[in-house]
Image 1: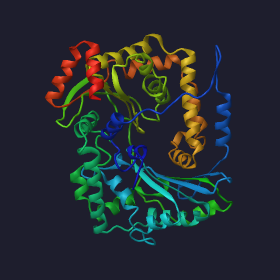
Image 2 (image 1 turned 90 degrees about the vertical axis):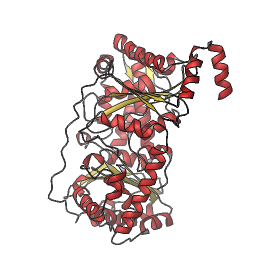
Image 3 (image 1 turned 90 degrees about the horizontal axis):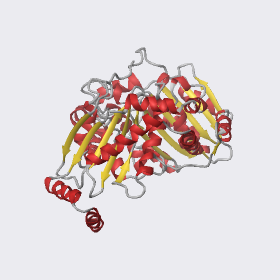
Image 4 (image 1 turned 135 degrees about the vertical axis):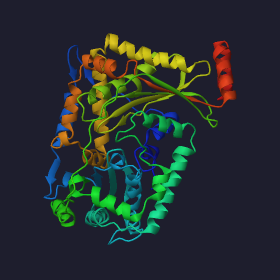
Length: 491
């Protein structure tokens, strides 16, 4: 499927720390601060909270007898409907020898079902002007489509048919194996640093459910059979592992239509897979990766944090925003006059049972990787020693709530958001996560910084061939002005 860069990161093109590195190195931040009011003793975000509450009150929650969770948001002023279907199956469910099966199966669900054989699904969706896609992650797989409201019944029929009755042939499997291997080559193996960086990061959680790439290994993808993939479908594609969300122009019969196509679907007898949070003893780790294709050195830093069910999740999210992400982040503020990095990017990896904060810094000509590490360490130390003042903490919360509002303004994004609701937020998917964020204090942020970040970085030096390293080392010792002149000339 065709995807934008943002979709690619969370989609079937690549879902591993390696491709996060690719985006980190090649993209720029777009987050910003929106207006908010700060008082001396209170962070006043009541208007935004009221908007979230009003939005949540528009959600109709239903659960079918087979366990399928359905959420509806009627937006009668629209002419379209967005549908998001999410299943609790991802790469963490794959046993040894079957890595990449969740991603490969996602491909196959666009390639034929009992009542829509071969390419009928994409052809019919394209014919009615629908926009559709899918993505596979560590913990889940989601499918989403936006289409004219009058075609909703057709779409629900086609969605149910491919989810419940996919048709897999050896020919189709072989064709999609080729597509996945091409993705693997394009997004990982043909990019400098990515394969070894991915393998090193995954090795840090060896033996856990997250110790292999979402896209899988070449050997496992190549050896997959139609029979094995059918068994994978029967085990994991089940109504009691699915959340279905519909946002847009709906009518009073929408739930009846959902029931017509999904209610007879019965869950298998097998229990759901059970996973425990990863137990990691964070400590400072350092390695080097030399790639003859590398154009310039870079510093990759990563920190083990927590999954989204953990009590510290929202605190760490605010800390990440403060340090590296929004436009007024600490890294930018401390380097605004003459930044030592040409580029910085951070894309946190969020899983159910684990989390990874990461940062890639590409140094200026006269800045060493060690100096960049020292800069980041100083930012972390500053947080531990002094915390975050009330105004800045309020600003971080304003960024969080405004980003959420912007996301939910799009019907497709809202449908995807609702279908990704965690178990603990089932009845209050919008306001309950915000309430946890609202309760975060400066002391909380100091505590998690000490607990998860100080002296606990996984450092990977990404190094180009020797002659580029030699030239870079020379630039680091030349007079600053001369080095900057050479840098500008080269760029």
